Image (cartoon, rainbow, N blue to C red; front, side, top):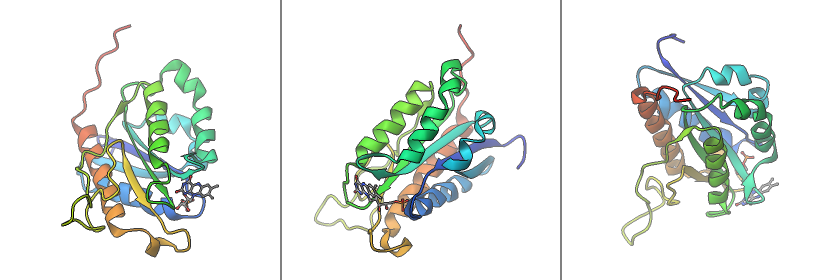
Length: 196
Ligand SMILES: Cc1cc2nc3c(=O)[nH]c(=O)nc-3n(C[C@H](O)[C@H](O)[C@H](O)COP(=O)(O)O)c2cc1C
């Protein structure tokens, strides 16, 4: 990594692998932007590297939707950041989120809302997906970007009886758009000076 580059961490959980493909797509989208170094961090490792995360300029949080919520390992990570939260150590860092589930809806929005509130409690600056909804007209199709129609962050749907072949290719492209957008925002972001 080049020290002058901005640093983005893609912190994610994936129980059975599907969300890891989405996380890699987010990472690959961010890598399209020069001047940014992007690192994939499994949430199990992130819990042991909170100091390292505090050196990031941006964090993109992702997990599968389990029981209409963030998955339990990701929630454990959220709670493990309590000391940083108390000190507001991540204030003014850029944040974004993504989630994946077995159903087209699957109550995924609730997961993105939870990721958003987590980032807001840390004083972070949330960047949404920034794409129009896709596959919402007679002329549309599942190959369109943002075909699940999300604004808070990137959504993907994975067939529960398949691996990566059960994830719509457009969902992975949508995830890459989130990564690229957050990389561009991070490059241009000037955190405000503290006004204690
Ligand atoms: C405990 C559990 C709860 C789940 N809850 C939901 C749910 O609320 N909505 C949904 O659409 N799919 C649900 N699923 C399906 C997963 O979201 C889906 O299989 C997803 O692709 C798993 O991602 P992963 O392979 O990264 O773990 C659930 C799966 C498990 C194991």
